[in-house]
Image (cartoon, rainbow, N blue to C red):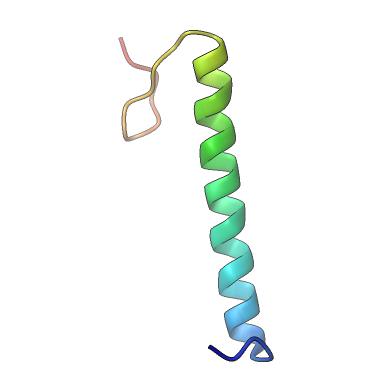
Length: 44
């Protein structure tokens, strides 16, 4: 994997950002006691 390739850097940064916000969303909902479905809508 060539990290000097700007496309690889951009894709990696985007994936890390998406994973971070997905995890943060789950963490916040966990604190509030609201489980999430896989489509990120609050579970009824």
